[in-house]
Structure formats: structure tokens, C-alpha cells
Length: 531
Image (cartoon, rainbow, N blue to C red; front, top):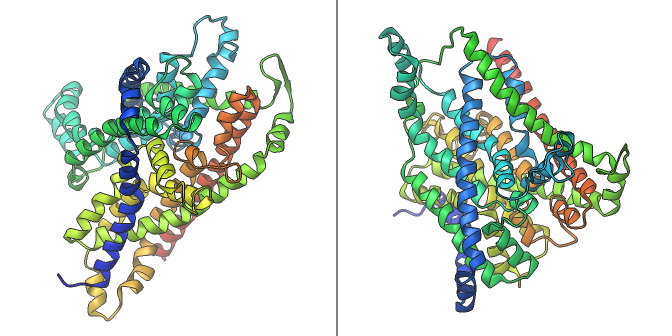
């Protein structure tokens, strides 16, 4: 094999990814001892938590998929108005930490909740029902975006032929839609399942005595610093995540989007449109209700005994270093976005534009982080880096966030680069133009909007993450999202609501700026083409 610069580059990136993903996980496994195994597998609490995790995750996953499909169908298969606005509002839950969704449900349906007192209800949100509902709110936006992308590129030709042949709509759904959705939906199912089964934010807020495995891992590793027991539970959490990843990898459908010959044509159908409006209205109202609940609590003097309007809760939050933690989060998110976007672009270029055996290995390594829960990743980083100079610094928070969120931005760029003319580099070589010049003058300009999306993905997720960083943050570099749990512990729910609002405001602003830049750039591109 001829050793070239590109080969050295691919091997270097592979080694880096192996060192920051696989090595920490292997080190965590070696941290497990016999006493920890016995402590976990002889405990009744472990099996109860395992059963709780499986049952709540399965129910929440099914509901999330149904809701997500109904929403995606409403957006792409009806003639509703205001689709763009609805699509934006439907992803709002992605802009706040999962623990905030649980907190919002407590504000609405807790013992002193707004809805509870309004209707004099006696049922409690705590337990199985609360965990399922919170998990659905947390996960359905991701499933909605994934299913939307599937429906967006569905070919209309089979439906047109079926209409000509007089085949009914139900039969069309069974014979055309379901076979088309089957393989792509595998990715959606396992992405949603993994999100829910590894989350500890929602169960921590509304679980009560209904413990799940991530909550026990959090209590053992963060609360009691029992890393051996935490490692055992982390290994158990890895099993469904890795299993889902491998099943998805082996069943990926690579051909759906390649055979689109005709965009979907929507006929006039008022009954169908009304159903779409009803579905979207119900979900949007509930989503906004949870977000508005933060505002009610954040601006209440003492919820629920004194509901008079005040800004005191913001002052209290900033007095308790909320301002410095906000700056920590923004700095961490900016640096993670810059480093992560650059690293993901370089890696995707090697895998998408250089089709070799080493590229395939590198591609597989690049998406491995999809199978690693944030809690497990954070715990593995504690174990392997706790005696090094990076432990307790901003550097390790950036590292763990880049690894945690790397796969999705990488796949964005991988797909974008794969759609470009495969002969660009060959033509450049013939004309005497080197590869770096082509990347700078051709590839980056053509992929600039994907780069923006990658940057915003890293930023938004870094601002609201609580899983991986909860093990690694110190009082000096603590991200703002971790204050939510701290304020809840001290029953300062108003301040916790303020934190959720601040994170939401920052993320909405960043997404708005990215959207405005893209819109302006697209208009400019269209104008330049027409001149």
C-alpha cells in the first residue's frame, strides 16, 4: 500500500476517534470488579429499575413515533397554511434540557400545578405516566424531523399509478407507503428508543419512586462517587444502545431517496387538511403550554402561594452565579461548535470523497458515538482523565461534547459531500489545481449551509446537555443547564424555570441567526443565478 498524505490523514483521524471514544469505554469496563457486579446484580432495586426503563421507554417510543408520523404527515401530505411556522414551533422542545420538560410537567400537573388546581384534579404526574409523557415531549421532535425527511423525498409515481388503477387509499398505504417507510423507520425507532432509555433528566424530575437505570447511574456516580457500580450500570445501558446501533447499521436503506422521479402532488381535500390542523394544533398548544409554564413560574414571586409578577427570580439566579454559568455554557458551546464542525468536516471529506478501505473503517468509527449514551461517555471520561491535567477544565467539557454530538453533524456533511460531483478532484488534478484549493474555492462554498447547520447543532446541544458534562463539570466551569437540578434540589423552582428560559432564549437566538443567514444567502444565490 502506497503511503500518501491522505492515508496518513485518515489513519490519524481514526486514531484520534479511537482514543477519545473506544479507549475511555474500555477503561471503564476494566474499572468493574466482582464486588460491583455482585452489588448490582443481587439488588432488587436494579431489576426494578431495569423493568421500569424498558417499559417506560417502549411505551414512550411508540407514542413518540405515532405523534411524529402524524405531524410529519400533516406537514407534507396536506395543504395546511403556516407549515413553516408550525415546523419551527414543533422543534422547540429540542432547545431545552430534558430535565426542563419534567419540570414543566410538574408546574402544570404537579400537586400544586396550574392544571391540577384549575380542574381540582387528584391524580399525580409523578411515576410511570409522568416519565412517559415527559419522554414523549423530549423525543418526538427528533422523530418528527427524521420522518419529515423521509416523507419529503417520497416518490409520487407509484401513487399516481395506483390512482389511475383505482386502488383505494387504505390499500395504497399498505402496499406503497408501509414498504417505503419500513427500512428508514428502523433508524427513527432506534434513535428514539436510545434517546429515551439513556435519559435521566425526565425521570429525575417526575419519576418520584419510579427509578430508571440512568437515574441510578447518576445517583451512584455523581451522588456517591461509586464509579465501579456506575460502570456496571453503564455497561448495561450500553447494551440496548449498541444493539440498536448495530441493527440500524445492518438494515440501513441506501436506495429510497435515489429513485425519486416525481415530487408528491397534493390534491384539494378539506377533510384531510382539517385533520392536519387538528393534529398540529393539539401538539403545538401542549408544547407551548409547557414552555409558557416556565414563564409563569419564573415571573411569579413565590409559586404557587404568591403569583404576583416580579423580576426577583432573575436577580436571584444571577446572584447565585447564573450569569457566569451562562457565559461558561456559551463559551463551551461556541468552542465545541468550532472544533466539532471543523473536525466533522475534515473527517467527512476523507470518508465521502476518498472511497478506500480505510475510509470505510473511518466512517464506521465516526458513527460509533451514536451508540454511546451521554451518561456512559461522561463516566468513562471521569475514570480515564481524572488524574490528568485536562480534568476539571473547559477542555474536557469540549472534548466530551464533540464526541457526544459528533455523529449527526458528521453524517450531515458526509451526505452533502456525497452528492457533489465525484470528479471535482480529478479535474482539478488535470488542471494543476491542488486539493486544498478545490476544498477552499469549491467544496466549502457549496456546503456552507450544511456547515451552518452543523455549527448550530453542536451549539444548541452543548448549551442544553446535562448528561455527559454532569460528571465532569466543576464549580468554576459548570454549564448553566446543571443549575436546574441544583435549584430543584433546594426547592428553588422559580430559579430553575429562569435557567430553562435563558437556555431556550440563547438557542432560539442562535437558530434564528443561522436561519436568517441561510435565507439571505439563498436569496443572494438565486439572484446571482438570474443575473
